[in-house]
Amino acid sequence: MTQRAFTAAFLGVALLTGVGACGPGINATTPVEPKSECVDLTGAYRANFTTSCGQSATTLPVSVSQAACTFTTTIPGLGGLSGKIVKDQAAVTLEFASPCSGQATGTATIATGRIDAAFAGTQSGTGACCSVVSGTVSIFK
Image 1 (tube, helix red, strand yellow):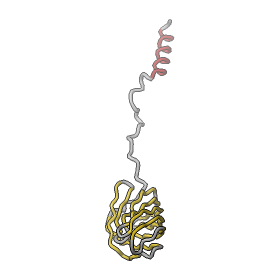
Image 2 (cartoon, rainbow, N blue to C red; image 1 turned 90 degrees about the vertical axis):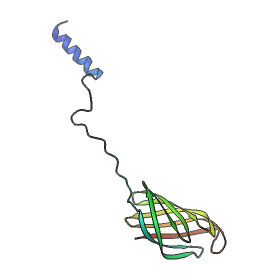
Image 3 (tube, rainbow, N blue to C red; image 1 turned 90 degrees about the horizontal axis):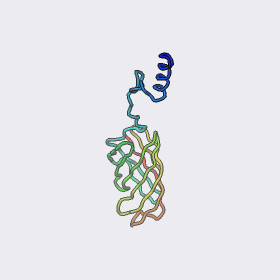
Image 4 (cartoon, rainbow, N blue to C red; image 1 turned 180 degrees about the vertical axis):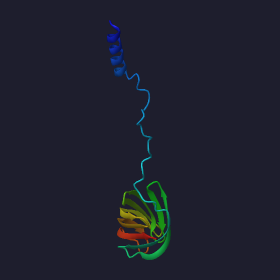
């Protein structure tokens, strides 16, 4: 085998086995943390709500907490509302507060400084509680 044939064979084997490919290369980019696809809702707000069972309130002070894209808040007289934000929407769950108990689910539209949700579910309890309930909640700055 001539020197030229040996060099060509060696280069062919080196290319097939990846010899010489030692690292990401000059044009490699640094990995970037993916951007969250949700707005930060953390802070003090006001809330309005109304239900098909006659429960309602306006301009209640509430505080919204958020971890990653999941928000939570407690609305006095209604219950705990939580949701997972995906872009400008959220799937929400409402756990009714005493004197009612039960749960409702729904969807919300999310914007900076605003959550508008519609929900439906079941309640039990006394007073303005009813077995089938629906309603709306607006949380705003």
